[in-house]
Amino acid sequence: MPVVRTDGISLGYEEYGTGDPVVMVTGTGASGRMWRTHQVPALTAAGHRVITLDNRGIPPSDPCPDDFTLVDMAADVARLIEHVGAGPCRVVGYSLGALAVQELLVARPGLVRQAVLMATSGRTDALTAAMTAADLELGHEGGKLPPRFAAYVKALQNLSPRTLNDEERLRDWLAVFEMSAVDLAGIRGQLGLQLIPDRRPAYRRISTPCLVIGFQDDLVVRPHLSREVARAIPGSSYTEIPGCGHYGYLENPAAVNAAIVEFFGAAGRPCRP
Image (tube, rainbow, N blue to C red; front, side, top):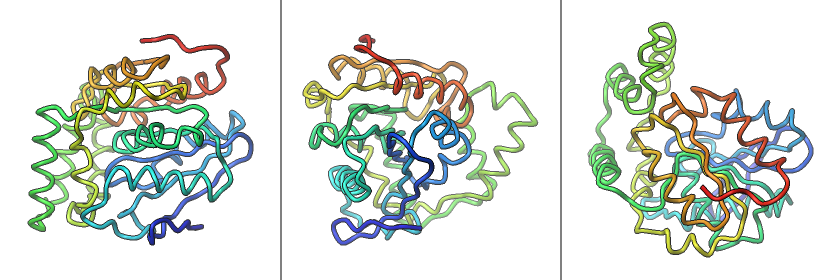
């Protein structure tokens, strides 16, 4: 796997396909491999060169220090774009990755041609603060939930009622969650990054064309928070994928991929939400 050095940290990344570049930035505790099953094939088929990043703290990238910030994360994405000679390019961010991309759009707009922001927010609400505080407490105390219990909690947090009520699909999801349980102590540098001030005033300076995607049944980042981001970014567009939880890009990848590909290929100005 190739690496890029940024701020003394080695970050792993992968490249797929040829054509117009798209850089993809993941969420908390996730590796760049999360895009390979659904999004990479769809985007490469649409004529894009896809570059996926393993954020700090996610092997094979170096561990992330406790004082790691969203500004650092945005700088990592910028360094990757420059390293692979992709700018200005299209960028896709999901959850924590979307927060970092939003900071990139504020600080280095010349590097990004278009941006897709999935399951994102522009401020910390009470539920996000409570979830983050609980994760930080568990991570700092070195606590690790039993894999079966962690899988059950993850399913309730991230999947839609439609998936939870489909017993065959749910069993598959629970098996995956149990086998891929994340050690919060290992990623605790990422855990507090969702605690942000209200950044919507800063987003009003963003001039990059943006598509914001919300998921109807998302309990981690409720869709009204994503709609707020779309309203704050001038000229942005918003779409909401029905019947999906926080993992909507995996629950209904066809709809998500279609929205991304259509946005990247669309001509003219996007409509405001």
